[in-house]
Length: 456
Ligand code: NAD
Ligand code: UDP
Image 1: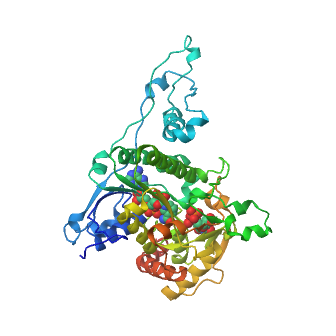
Image 2 (image 1 turned 180 degrees about the vertical axis):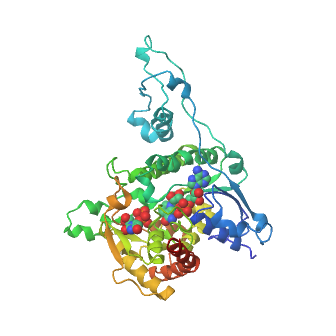
Image 3 (image 1 turned 120 degrees about the horizontal axis):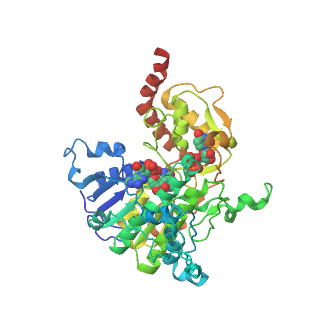
């Protein structure tokens, strides 16, 4: 393998990378790239390994076999303190750092105090810190913070990449607790161990931290809606605009935002070397699952897999609330190039938050459905339905508490300046290669699955 150099012409030394969530969609593509094209070593952590089985098996058979290990591991924590709960009927939690002067000077303590330290309380722990009422209550001098594991693997690595998360919108309003725990609490030990052991962290956040655009609050016919400053999303300028708490869709974005703030604060207060990635709808082969074939038949994956499933079943594609929301889609292989540049150019990537998306590939969800229908017809040779789409309400499709991001155009200035990265693949081309993969991988299994009930 030719010696690799970074963007400044300096040789890149082989790294050991602890990759958490290595068995997922993005993780599987990143592992593939690292094994095929670099000398880097991967310690892959996940609860599943199906999507990287081809890299791991048969054991010892690949040129990279000694460079990839898989550790089946769940990074979740447990909590303590339960004893005190059980003694009480009511919990009053007053514990908090709550002086504004601390919010920007001690952001870490502030976040820990107001969220992390309150968690065990929410989990039914009774702790009363009301000193005035000491005479009538018991006082327990107790610090409610948690500890975790994982440290060994992070210590063995030069770099940790955290991809682990619940990240399918159908979960955000139906499993908001799991969503918040997964995207914030479960990521905490990772951040902590990287910081304490002076290890570099690349953390996967989301474009959804931007929430809704400013323009979406303007009157429908306002000419300002066409002005880029009302919709283009910039890492260092755009606000994060979420809906009300009862719209539980935003549980994911809010948890991701808080973990970003915590990582940023670890950088500011404790010198953590970090990079935060905000993916804008990365799509391609191996994304999510096809319900009833390689995932639960009632499961709702992200839009690419939902529409692929409809096409494979020859049923109309379901447009939620008219399919008017807009998205920009980037090909997974283009996006992985951006992550490679971050991995191998720490001096240019550290301390930055990067949008990674393709602003040229914007469509409404309805246009995506129409394009996927045309592309699938081309790659499968099957004619499309006369009525290829059907409207459904978000209430019917996702249940109560769903809400949507209206438009997501990434500003590319920072990633372009720091890493010289630009996406290349058009939406038509990326759909053509992805739907060719979906057809090759699933069409036969789908035929059999559909035929089975009739045969019975
Ligand atoms: P994915 O669901 O395919 O991958 C996530 C992986 O993390 C899964 O394999 C899962 O098993 C693993 N995981 C979850 N909880 C875990 C735990 N407690 N312990 C160990 N492993 C655990 O999703 P993806 O599309 O590959 O996304 C990866 C990251 O990128 C996520 O953080 C997600 O929020 C972010 N992201 C992705 C996109 C996108 O376009 N694909 C968009 C926005 C954000
Ligand atoms: N969507 C849809 N039909 C589906 C699945 C999703 O109309 O079968 C819509 C969804 O409401 C959203 C967009 O497609 O407006 C993208 O959804 P996805 O789940 O991929 O994630 P998001 O981009 O919202 O994070």
